[in-house]
Amino acid sequence: MALTIHCIDSSNNNDRCFNALFEVLNCIRFYEVTKSTEIIPNKDIYITNNIAIIPPVNKPCIYFMSYNPFVSDIEAFVYNKSSKTLTNCTQIWIQDVYKEYKEYVETIYKVPVIIVPFMYGLNDKLLQQERKNDRLDIILYESNKTFNESALKSLYICEEMYMRHPTKIGTIYLFNIPSNDIAPKMLDSFTLWKDKKLRIFSNIKETDILNFFSNSTNYCVFLSNAVLEHISPFMYDIVNQGFPLMHTQSVSTFPYGTYYDKNNIDDCISQLISYKEIKPNQLYSNEEFQKHKLFQIQAIKDACDSFFK
Image 1 (cartoon, rainbow, N blue to C red):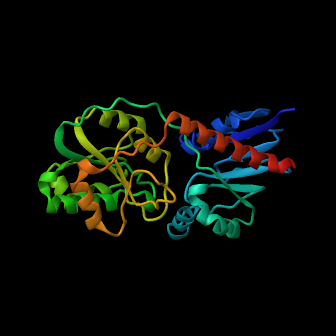
Image 2: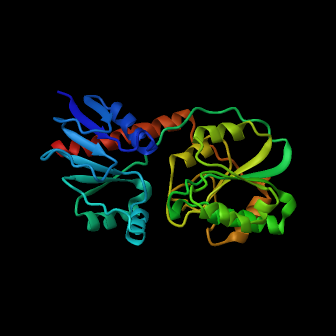
Image 3: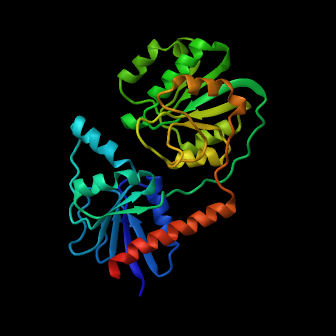
C-alpha cells in the first residue's frame, strides 16, 4: 500500500526549495504525494513550509525550513514580527547548508531536527552570447526581504569601486528594490545613481534576469555579500548557467563561484577589476546532477520511512 504524503505549501509555488522537495518525493516509488495550500485529511505524513499550520492530531507532521532559521528568529525578536509556535509538529527538516543551526532549532522548538540535502532543481541551459564589449556590468540580485538578504553592502562595494576606478564600471543592476519610501531616497547619496550608472528594478523573475544577461555582450558578474550563511537556488542557477558569481559563503557550504572575505572590500574590488579572470565555474554536468538527485531521493526516503520503522 502506498505511503500517502501531503505537502502544504503556503508560498503559492514561490518556495523553490519546497517545490524541489515535492519533486523529489514524487520520484520515490510507493509514495502517493499531493500538494496544495490546504490540509487534506487522512494522509500518512504531512510536510509544510508554514510553521502556523495546525496538522491533524496523531499524524506525523514535518516542518521544512527553506531558510536560515537563526536570521528569521533574530528579525522576529528585534522587529516585533509574529512569533513562531509549533503545533503538533513531529520533526523539523533543515537543509544541510544550515546544519550549524541544528542544535539551536532543537533547543528553541523542542522537537527532533533532521538534516536533509539542499533542495533545488536546475533550469535549462541558456545560450551565452560572446562577451565582446570591454566593460563590466555588476548584478545585485539579493531579494532584499531580510537584513541577511540585502544588497546594500554589495551596492556600497560597487560605489567604492566606482570612486576608485570610474572607467571600470559599466552599469550596476540592482534588482528587488524594496517597496518602501526610504530605500530609493538612500540611493541619492550614491555617485553611481547621480552619474546614471545604477539601474533599479522591482521584482523580476529570476529566469528573466538570466535570459537578459545571457543575451548581453558585456562582461557580467553577479555579486553578493550576506551577513550570515544564506544559500538560494538562484545561486546554483547563476553558476550553472556559466555566469561568474562572487559571494561570501564559506567554501564548505557553497564551493562554487568565487569566494571573497565579506569584511575585505579591497580584496573584492581587486577581483572585480580583474573581472576577465573570474572563472564562471559551471556547477554540474548532467551526470553529476543525476547523481545528486539520487542522493536527494535516498535521503528524503530514509527520513520519511523513519516514522514507520
